[in-house]
Length: 590
Image (cartoon, rainbow, N blue to C red):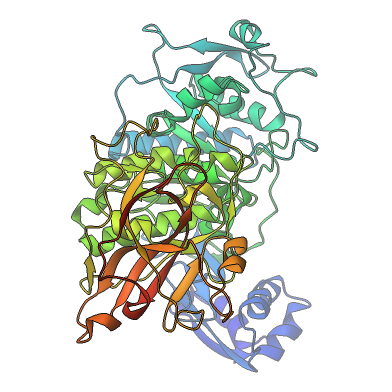
């Protein structure tokens, strides 16, 4: 005998639309051995019901079926065939099976997404006529494309596509780069086939670009002269323009490296047809999960890619399960599902981060803190790229906030942004190799000088009084001793007072493990010789000023000049543990 869920779903369409079935799990399991529909239902019961209740409820909410009425995960999809007329708004027309990779149907769907956005949205907000310094010019046909590197000039006009990809492990992935030694060759021809031809990911990007009728493609390793520090420095500063002005960005989410490719077959999707007098319906395995497939893919765990996505106005994500389109109006799936991405007002916003103009101060602070905390967790092949890989995004934020910004610090939020710290239990590591083309290292007061995940000290908004003991590093009259604008932080250093060799009520957080070992305040015999602090702010509202919490930056003498210090941490210091009666000493932190 069929169980109740089986009977209801095989009933009329009206029954399907009002489906809220309460049934026996053991009966469903038994039927799943012979019935395809019950097998399809039983799998998400196992996956999404960890407690395995003897009886369960199946809810239809919109176009999905769920085992949890209030859960965020869709377990099964309910879609209608295109011939069904008079559908309610909540039930979508969909594709039970996604198009074959590289098929005309798939390419036509991508073209339709682009056309719809061009005609009905206002996502393209870039500079009219902008072109990168170099692009790959594509001509010919897909069987024998002709490629060459083309330098920008007044005659270089048209739209270009940008590729966001992983370089991959050099020992496992073949890499193709433009170098000073082959630059002239690439101006004439970049081989598509053969041992010197394009690796898989680049070949797939060329195919998509050409089949969509676009003549130019931008790929970092080919359009920036690698191992040329001057060109790298120049072009890394243009990433904001490159991605924000692209016609769209290809996100090669499923490719682990240059040689991997992204136009590969995808896992098949299980669908059960349901016939009715109104037309064809389907109950399908739910594969629409943009967060899992795109946002949590390996590509989005790379540092450079974080700003590439935020700066792109429109992106097409080629993932393991299906292709997704993202613009300011949401996310579209190959299944024809449309979803309002919660991040559309954040990373997916084509005008990112203009929505912040309507936010209050607290929300703006949380915005940049969230961005920096997320970015600090991401991987970089070359750690010294840490400030450069977010420079375009940082510049965009600085303009939106009407302030100066560099190295993870904003002048408008100077005191708060200086109070970064490592996450609990995980110390940071200094980056020893300097960025290409630099003559001075990244300042120690910037978290971009270290490897590791960051957080920020919680100085409550409205309950913190900021001191005037720290000067902006962005002041135009800064000492000429600094050859890089904004590198030196001038401030008043104050002595920390320990009793019995330790601080009584202070919480000190050292950036690196070796500084923690050196100045560990749990050792009674240890005197923090040389350790001083800069008072950035203090907690309001305490009736005993000497016992106020002070928010401080910890510093030690740096090598060389007197009164030159380096940051080693931050802290929340009890008023009794910092000397505030004396005027302090003006120092520079580098």
